[in-house]
Image 1 (cartoon, rainbow, N blue to C red):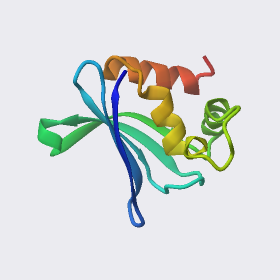
Image 2 (spheres, one colour):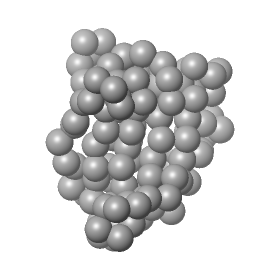
Image 3 (cartoon, rainbow, N blue to C red):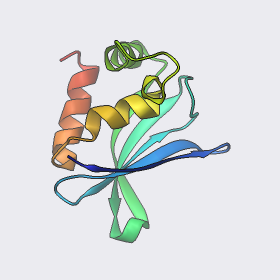
Length: 114
């Protein structure tokens, strides 16, 4: 199971959380709006001491696929819980990924309805 860092909220940049996967790779899950609103959620592979990153997944939460993905991820979750937010839902979904490749495949499958 990956090590989940703190959830950080920045009023100008949204909210994000860093996860260290079992492979020791680090990913950053970022929601550009924070909170419960739509917007864009991205997952990036953190490189070289956190000074740069490569985007490995992007989800437009306002698109049909994004809405279906959020509905699947938040099914049965208390509506006022952090796990009902886009950031919380995706962190919960990817935190057990063994590698960046597995996380990317799981997220792409989620958008494809698998």
